Image (cartoon, rainbow, N blue to C red; front, side, top):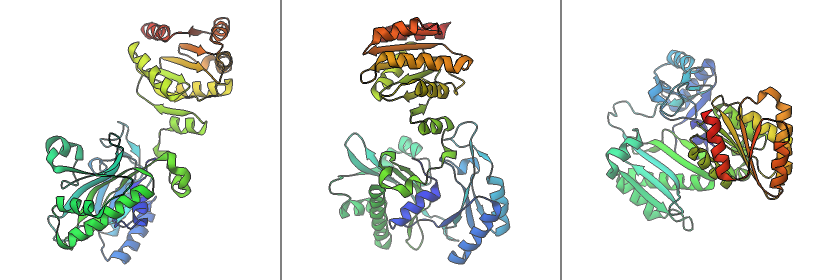
Length: 398
């Protein structure tokens, strides 16, 4: 589950990570009040206005601007709020900005060359260990840094059993070229950051930039945080941070219906039971000359209501030219699934305007095929993988 910058910073701060202070606002008037409050706390009248969307590269799209007084805070906030912000990480349409973060200006006047670092914490799936990735080249596209100057990217793997050891935190600070007070502050920062990552059950922390001020303070100026949804049962307060406005509306609808659905860019809708079979079905579609339009796992229940809901969600995608239903009947019998498909087809009427290929294999597969073939519905039945692939290819070429 992705978080907004201000939410990520709240989590970091709760574990002792120093962050750029800020207050979120939903209107220009709220932005002005937030700026006034920050001025009282910090003593500075300059503020950074940051669009809050689930995408990086906001500055490149005009979503991060500096305001030197309250009038600019109001006018800039008014410009950003409600805009469709386009960044390298959004679609061509961009994302609607519903909130802005009014943040303190942490770059000191006269400090012409602030030190900006990159730092992230994530799981290295190849080794099964957590990994801290860091670089002296903060504030830049880390992908470009990795491609053009890979020697400037450092990694430190952490054994989950022992946690981050003191010598590792010191090594990171040393590789970043720090010494004295700045080195001590970085050790504290890295230690607190790793603790926050583990205890919040996060999948990713990315801080770009981590700033070293001229008086050796180390703080997170930005924060990209992705939480592990499988661990949200341990963090009821974090679950409430979900912003469904930032998520794909079809995926939100599917989640509410209890369906595992991921939207993709292809032209063949998939309805499958089981994640492994779903992955195999996506390969099947590619072999047939199509592209999967979604990942959809209906689970162990495939009655008419559930199948109808799944059809409706798949058909919300205008790019879908065919639907492949691929069900293995183990606990659930194939004939029950077939009846669900037929009933759903009848209930939806003319809402189904693309060919449907239905492959049912397993318990009562023959009865299921007979039921579909004799239903009078325009459903193409299949029993074997290759047969289903051939039929997908045929309807795409028609």
